[in-house]
Each structure stands twice: as structure tokens, then as C-alpha cells.
Length: 107
Image: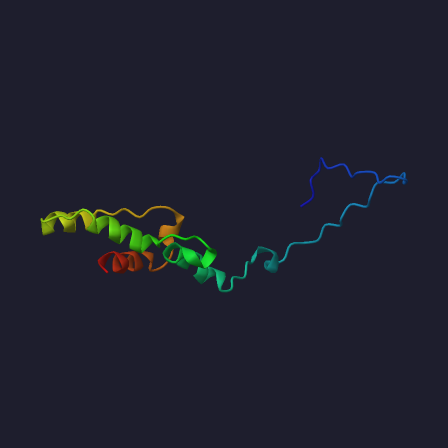
């Protein structure tokens, strides 16, 4: 849609403002986004940040190392700690992310 308050800029050397773009009716294609491999690569970057040049471990490895550093002798406490991990945010909605994180922590 066009901005009703927009005033076209007058080009230097002309007395007429530039012609405003013509409005066209919106179609179904205007509301579609086509994804390629990006839809798989974006979540994968959480587990393999080196794909984008970040020299750090992935989320699963980071969480697993943190859990192992607790060096807890009580298995029940370790299980409670593992079961109390809270995953939030938009990335938590990626299909299979919880299972992938759990698998990485148990490695």
C-alpha cells in the first residue's frame, strides 16, 4: 500500500515530481515465503556454530559439559538436574530440538 503522507521528491532540473508507483492488487504469491535449505541450516547452527565461523561448541555439547562438571555422586540429584533443563524462546519450537538436545547431553 502507498503511504498517504508521502510527498514525492522533485528531481533537480525538473519542475514535475517523479511519478508515484502504481498500486497493484495483492495476490496469493505476495503472502508466501519460499524456504530452501535455510530452514534446516538455521536450527543446525545452534549445534554446529562453526558452520558460520563461530569457534565455539554447540548448545548440546555446552549443556552436556556443564552437567558433567557438577561431578554429582547422587544419581537422583543428577537426574533431577537433567530433567529440570528449561528450553525457551522461538528456537525451542523447532521440531525435534528437545530430543536433539537430550541426545547431546547424554553423550
